[in-house]
Image (cartoon, rainbow, N blue to C red; front, side):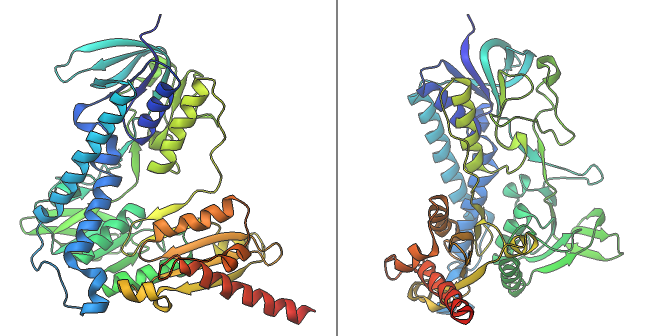
Amino acid sequence: MPDFDMLVIGSGPGGQKAAIAAAKLGRRVAIADRPEMVGGVSIHTGTVPSKTLREAVLYLTGLSQRDLYGQSYRLKEEITVADLTARTQHVVSREVDVVRNQLARNQVTLLSGTGRFVDDHTVAVRDASGQDRLLTADHIVIATGTRPARPATVEFDDRTVMDSDSVLNMADVPRSMVIVGAGVIGMEYASMFAALGSKITVVEQRDGMLDFCDVEVVEALKYRLRDLAVTFRFGETVAAVERHEHGTLTILESGKKIAADAVMYSAGRQGLTDELDLDKAGLSADKRGRISVDEHYRTTVPHIYAVGDVIGFPALAATSMEQGRAAAYHACDEPVNAMHHLQPIGIYTIPEISFIGKTEDQLTDEKVPFEVGVSRYRELARGQIIGDTHGMLKLLVSPGDRKLLGVHCFGSGATELIHIGQAVMGCGGTVDYLVDAVFNYPTLAESYKVAALDVTNKIRQIDRMER
């Protein structure tokens, strides 16, 4: 008889939800992770600390209140790293307690150590003293997550040349910083440090940033960041980074040189699979350390599953949780619906970006007719009250059946607001629901009604002309 019905390697969002789902179905479940990493990368170096840092930045700088109280307004004049990390450490420790409590409450055995395969049903869990404990399980779930990818040509010291993990442990707020990579993580940190007053230069080898987002929204973000003295170097590649006594020198292939206190690399993520001994279980990973799975999150070995960032796109905490639950249900022969194809994307820049569905460019390429409705926060009472006059909500609507094809939001609360559009789209609703609905006043949610009226008026004009 195996030691467990299910053994999960990794306690991040995907691993947690897989373990708890199986435990609720009456299975004997264990989850293995290093004691200092309970909750996974998401809690310790990823989602939770970076989003908490963002809240601390917004609060202490008073940035979101400057439209009301003047551009010189700050809650604290000299903001130190200690000011920023105090809130982060508090939230991280609370979240770890929540995870431990949930696992204990559901009678999931928490094993301290790192797991590696001995064979396809056996995992050796090595504790801090180097002792191995061999455990067998009917089903195994790999949820080891990722680490920041580090180019071999760059010498990281985690003090002046950092990645998105070590940036959380910096000694001082840099006066200037080069951020290499204009992806989601790069842009989130660029906006945070710019808000703190750091002079930021973003270097990106592509011709633009966040190319999967709505063009108008990206332009709005770019405008706001330039207003915070962010410089963009698109179409540029870093040739070398030199460390000097008083900072760093980033040399671009074009010959440009950028002096700064620090450099942060945001060059993608690498799957944490190199120490799993996957070959002993009959598995392999690609060059980015990712494991291939089917629609049920099964690997090529049917009783071994993989979920979360280690399987690649979309690599979000939210989707990882659903993947973990779905994998556990499938392993336990419990019926489970496939994950809904409509998934919101949230980007925690300053201001936030969030969207669901198609962009204008995608619909144009697919030759799908659409009409646009826009609402701007400055026209809403709530927008004036909170001092956000830059935010906007955009609805893309099919003129034929009046269904929502996409919702794009930029500004305060965008990642919360998007779920209204998600609910309407997911339930097959039309823009007419938003026209007829009554929203609380004053709220940012009213932006849906304003945008819905805007787009239906446009559709009505076209209909009248065609009669």
